[in-house]
Image (cartoon, rainbow, N blue to C red; front, side):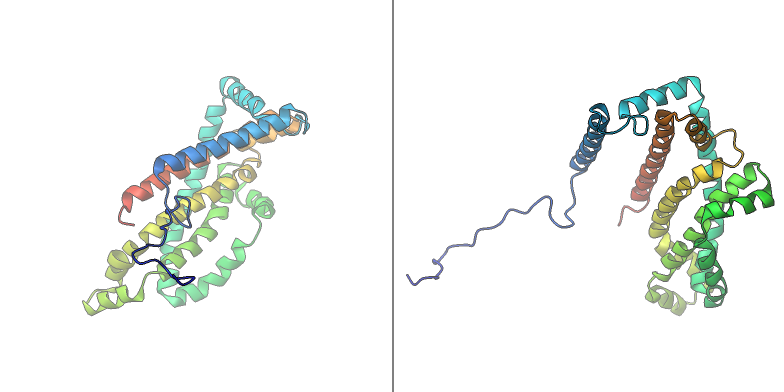
Length: 274
């Protein structure tokens, strides 16, 4: 047989598809196992680095010390109440921002007159650092609850409104044109076609911006606060209680992660067709 010829009836070896290939979905159980294993491995590495003296535990305490501090804070320092206060502040500011940003973003994208008038102002404000606006917030609203809600709203609204506008722009123009040929009004197009088409990505962006709102919590709660996780962290910082500082930070992450997973589950249940 000539060199390089393929035997009659022979088949090329079929490669077994890889479970970890590019954009290959993973079974839910395997994905959860990998996530838990990676998180546990990171915690063990952190514990080992602290316990074997590679870092000064005064500045970087071990996870076991952070966990012990968190238990102590829940038992003796009303940490659960502070967490509830912070959660209420974040959700209040986030819901106010969402109620304002959703219609504003839809109108900005649907009517270019509104978009041309408002986008430069929104783009300008969203680049302003929120900490730099704390003195103005105190002048405008005092040191009460309104200032904290305003700072959280400020860090969320101007980001969310542009995401909503982008969601509306991504609605295919064919949907609008077909609806217009059927005689639908502008309001019917917005309500029954465009809004329904953008809803999956809108819910996903709401989940993302809720996480952003949590990132501004410390800034909001250092303004003459007497409650909240940010207040607890700031008070512990004064006395170099690093495990308590880390416990507060970890608790924010836990609450944020739980909120994110709940919204992910809601998204999957609402839009099973995706």
